[in-house]
Length: 377
Image: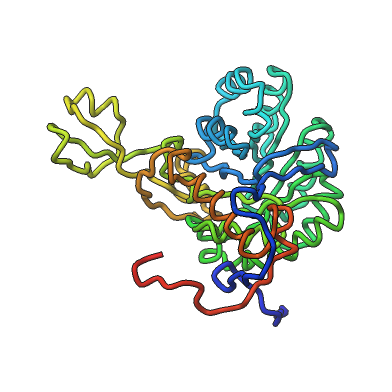
């Protein structure tokens, strides 16, 4: 046993210090980045925001919509092969440049990847996703995927320490390492297992390791507001992955709770989830989405749904909650506008003319209270 006494920080522990600058107006600040990847030797240009590969947010609709903004989506790994083949066949354009095929490390996952890849022209982006990226088997599986898909961009995780970043970049031949153990809004790993690492420090340390090898990192989890995304980029993240901030939007899939009305005036929130078709068949003329059931992919709900229930050797490590319906991600004053507007504002405050310059212009100030929350966050 040993104890590390160095202070480690999370998003809530710091705020970004403003600086006098000659930066252009927010309108002229560019958020697009161009990356050349270490092992695939390919390039990508876009806004480095990624929708998480949860079965509610990592959807095909989300992928198509975010691609319009040159943002990315990790499709969840539970789509059947035929649906994936159909999607990639119909979207051999900018959409697929911005969509990741996601798989786990089971043989059946690898076989599905091979099946889909043989049926379409190419799989450009692959995300190898597990809760614990510290096993030798995980590194070997990433390496095996690289041997089969030499030109694909491979993102692998999750981990939270620099030595594993180096291992996955060099031995696993990944391009992007996904950083985050336990910071997610519906993850309880830090409670159930007592394992994790404060996310801001994890990004700083892992980004330093990756960039020294010309690799890249994706900060996964912990962002609740656009300001957290700015802190992640300021800390050195190349990409930021979001779950709860995209949850509840029109492009999500899953179990919805609805409001119904007979006259379009008096609305009743139903106390159970159902489909719009079921409500229409029941004779309701006016139907609106009210909230989405949102849960961690290691929650009991997800395990029951995809793994046949808990085994005797594991515990659930995720929460189940509901998030309100938020409209479309591209709506006026919607989440895309909030994210891009917030990032441009951050750059203007610190004198960065682009997102690329933000880490060089960022100074974090440690604090105990980042904002006034008397009327909520």
